[in-house]
Amino acid sequence: MFLRMTGQTILAAIVIALLAAGWQMMTRSGVAGVGGPATVEQVHHDDD
Amino acid sequence: MTTTDVQRGSQRRKPGAIEFSILYGWHATLSGAFIVAYLSRDEDTYAMHQFAGYLVLAAIVVRLIAAILAPAGSPLRMPRPDVAKIRDWLSRCVRVKASPLPRRPLLALTAMLLLVGIGATSGSGAVADFVPPVETIHEALGELALWIVLAHVAIVVALHGFRPSWRRPRTVAAPTCPQRGRP
Image 1 (spheres, rainbow over the protein chains, first blue to last red):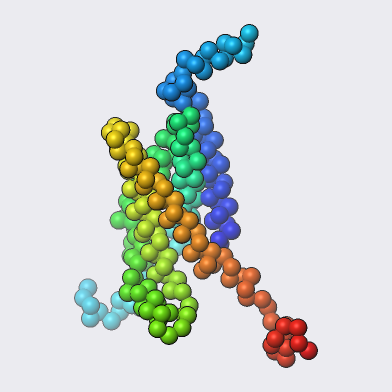
Image 2 (cartoon, rainbow over the protein chains, first blue to last red):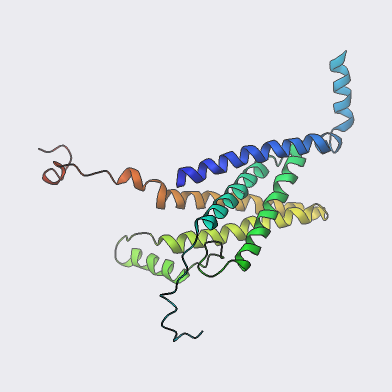
């Protein structure tokens, strides 16, 4: 039972991490909230 | 129903498999979300941290509602740690000798500590979204909750994880050779 519950926890963590990452990309708060303008400039520099 | 009701003990409700399935699913959701929330607490992954944190808070609320609505004898009921038994075990270990760990009281105690610790962490995180000064408290509670989680894992491993490896099947020759390496 211990291994089963540990495996379930890991599986749930992976699924939740994927959902959370999708939410992060949708809201883009990690980009706009802190380093928004600089990140946009870096993207333009990468394109040059 | 009074305390003199002699039929009370014999009519103990047997928990169903669905209740354990719900409990295990809830445990996986809560623990998985806590791991994601703890690992994503950086500023760059703040939206992930918020998502996972609110999922933890929702899991705690759902657990409390289930504990209120669940019938008596259900594993979904709130654990009620028997502190007296743990205290007795500790005094026995100090005075006499080591005795088997009180499994149920210990697990119930850690479950209550987890619910309180993780609940306080996720609740303070939700408050910190609107009251920024609370963020410091939220961070401290998060670190404390991690230690409670690690203690819970250690206790579960001590009580359940190593038992199968310690209990080796006895062979035919085992009774005549009680000490390893001797003929």
